Length: 221
Image (tube, rainbow, N blue to C red):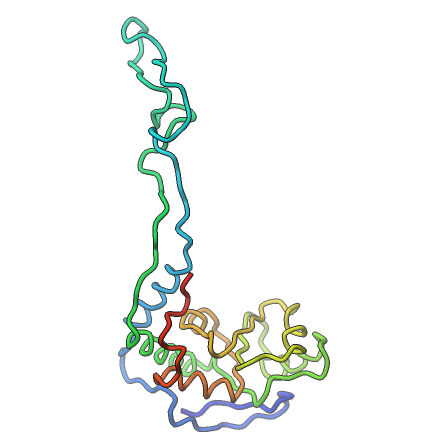
């Protein structure tokens, strides 16, 4: 697949062929992509919501009023769910929401996500991501050349220099991610992704099963 590669300052661009970039025909991999995205979203859930039942809530055990003669329905406890400050019926309890996906499914989902993002024109490359000084204006000038449309974007590199991390942290809508930590959810969530030429090689190797990072499930809590 051919991808647009910008120079380090973003002033010029050329198209470069990446022979090992994932290619798909038809709808192969879409179901795996959906399942992996759902699993990674579920793995981010803490699952610590908790409510007290009528057996756990604090309160008196005294009968509210006599059984007969009050003219209203009989009541035996103040801790029942329909009483104020009573327990909660069928409320949430701490649970594990995590889902397990096998390695082949994660690799297929990564390949499909990369292919779809590149096919939609949302994946661009840059030779190197570097700025002279940790100033936002330096990094913004590069983004204006490479990504003229304003909006959310993900910047990916193998390892970010300190100047880049400091220059990009105050730009609204810009997120940074290292290639070893890039997940399928990141690719799906961001419609505009800028990747360094060094990082794209790492990502392609991961997607083809050549990276050690594929043995762990991304997005786990």
